[in-house]
Length: 129
Image (cartoon, rainbow, N blue to C red; front, side, top):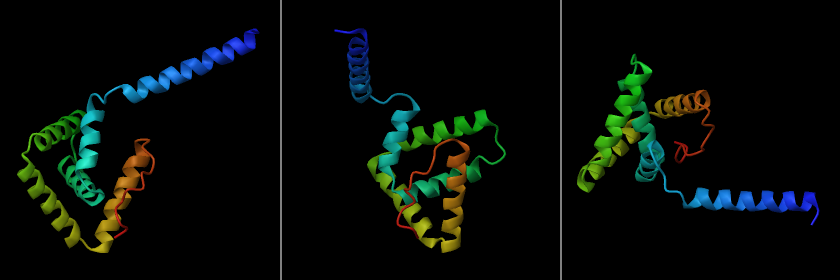
């Protein structure tokens, strides 16, 4: 086998093993909670949570904001199913009560936040209301 074929075969094996490891690794740290939270709330509910968090953390330092978000995440994750359902219903009611202009403003704030933090557009702003 020539050296170039050997390098190609070794590179391919490395890529396959890396992909397999990435798929088998369980989520850890903030990513694990984020993934669970992402699946727990609808796009509209997440937008209301984002808006609430932006309002609550205005004027805080980065460390204070991170601590606040961690506290909120832990509070939500420790809620009973009934409490989560009540919270979701409240978020849905509050989202429905917003005017189209308010909804557009929240969506724009989220897009600005994502762009500033290198998150890109996720296209999950709900049904376009």
